[in-house]
Image 1: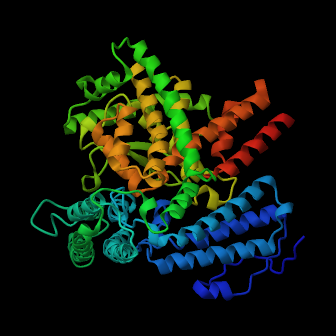
Image 2: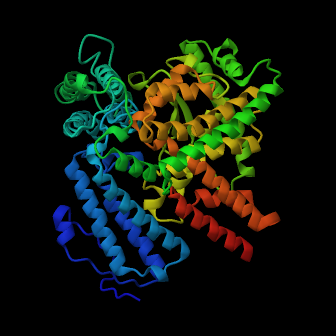
Length: 611
């Protein structure tokens, strides 16, 4: 057993190089090492959280409420040094062998997080800093609009400070984008065009010009009106704050966005008109291997992932053929794809009313599945879920729907966002399955339960998102919903297969683009050959894979592993297998790499055999 020299777990208030040169604090534990390390983990989570005011707000806190994250490389380096110092402290003060099984998983998870931070820094110059996939230039305004609550005057002054802080963040990101371009890393030209267009939308309209109120100005006015109507501030004070908000937008934020627009416009001719995978970048092959490991949390190679994708495409095509025959369609699968892609019955009107129909239908499906959850889960999320259309300044034709988690205390609901600017890119058959993927039993359930967990350290419950686990669970949930009685309409079930095929195709296309030299058009053609998804959606998807290498492989790799673990548990436990217990085990440890998930399931199997 290791020795401990202090009774209390005191924070180490050192940063940067001082952190690495400071002696490792020693800790005396008055209880078991498991209890002691869990308290240490929670304290360290509070330290780590200080690096990100955005995460603090996302968790429903109002600490550092007037700040935006420091997005510079110097800040990243300081955070890595913190991880290294904290890990050295853990290793010096606690004995892994004396911890409980769950605490050992927490130790492993801590090491995993530290390793992730270190690995990311090795490839800074290969990253696409700003691009069209919910890039920081749009996500920061969306964050301030959607998550910064204003309940009193101090909240409003913090809101205004953040408007100005967006400008500082954009200057930091522009500096990094320029440095990476100098090193030979530029996203394709289509991504430049998106950044220029989206940035322009954010600084168009009042107070930047005589147009309609911009999104951030409208949000400012809405908050000021709310404070006045509540009697929290006077009209006179609202006028003063309005001037401050205008200044923050016009003098701090807008010039930074204009600098982004100007540089991206100037550098645009240097970007590839015909997109290439990251394998063509300097050190691109190593970077792509890193991304595959980061996204899948496995050691699978690009070739292995590619072959898995090809096999899954073949399997799913067989199931698609069965539904085509079930609805008595006269023609081959390609003709059925064309029918599903082109027939008007599979689309809502391309109007705001049609967009609302889409949202209403998604809400109806989610209401149905909510009634089935207790049969398959012992632990249910407390947070509410709402469905919203993406804000106009970041809405894109055919872009993928997505989820934004609420707060652990339920004060802000989780949000399923849908891009509905082109209803011909949002067919009805996959609507049901996408609602389950983004909502329940998918992302909303997984993320909300994780945040609400009390039996594990906060750094696991609230500490971050691991794509292979989160996306693997959401894709597994699509099939699980069929067990729960969903997809009664065969076209909806075909929609389910369409989205599973979508994820199988991703394995082929992502690896094809980044490790096999596939062109954008080659990837689009393969997608259209094996899916009824509209071409607008397909093109948007392929461009997503190009600027987010490896991310698209997380879904199917994660789903397959969860299915394998379930099959293992069913085989070993036989009639005593409890589906509720299995799902609670999978979701009860927070977002984890697949190796740690396997350990959790193995522990549950062993415990189930003993009971």
